[in-house]
Length: 156
Image (cartoon, rainbow, N blue to C red; front, side, top):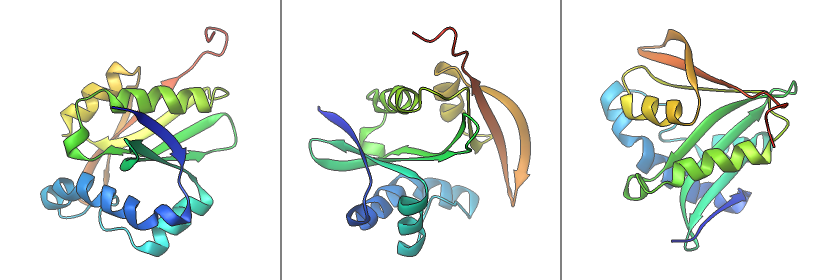
């Protein structure tokens, strides 16, 4: 299984919408809303043009999406990291975290949000060095904010 991370382009809009719909359908059903599900072509195009968007490829098929926002102060927000369910639990997410952290080696802080009751996500992000710093409501969904601080002096 060959995994590659590549910048997303406008040509990837429909494929990435399809990937996100597969990834976030269960959340949409569970919560009645999910910002990652059923994104319009315009919104996905805007994300690709105005954020840092990657596609995750496995054997030349798009199987995941990463979206990063640069806060322009050595801090970054991981807006999306998703892999279609068929490819979960194969180490791809861990590879993706290592990839973005190496791509943005100037980062001193990473943040991300996930629902409070998504314990598998919590386990995954804690394993990658993230800690919960806050809980809050966003609409009808209770979220946690994860943070990972990186000490540049300890990086090799």
